[in-house]
Length: 152
Image 1 (tube, rainbow, N blue to C red):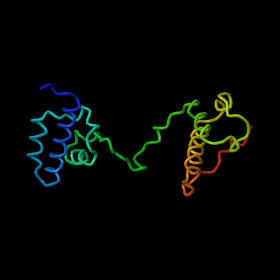
Image 2: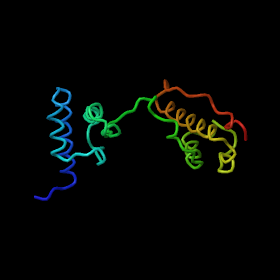
Image 3: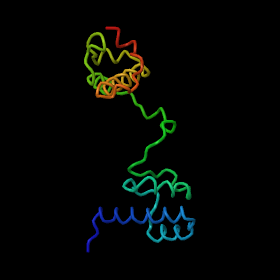
Image 4: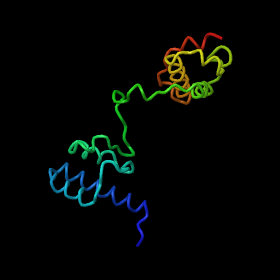
């Protein structure tokens, strides 16, 4: 029988699940033996595994410290500011999420090019929040409107 990538991923996820439970039950030596025998390495793609299971591996073995599963949800404090990267087209696209009555004049590439990174990020956050708030989520917090949207 030929092993498809899906079959191998399912097998690996099952082994990770079993190993995680062994770790939680205190059988770390046996869990290590199984991980080694299955040749599961932290540098391989394990994103199809449950993060709850991978968390047990992260907590037990330092080499798995940066391995996360498909359902990983970082705490807001864990998200570094550097994840946001300025992209003027993205900023313009965010303004298209809301109607133009939220800002004066068209938001053009030339206009956005004059904004600072902080202003672009604030515009994106504002537009996304207004969009979410208007979609039957009227309790979603909307930050103050950035001043650059008022100037034409």
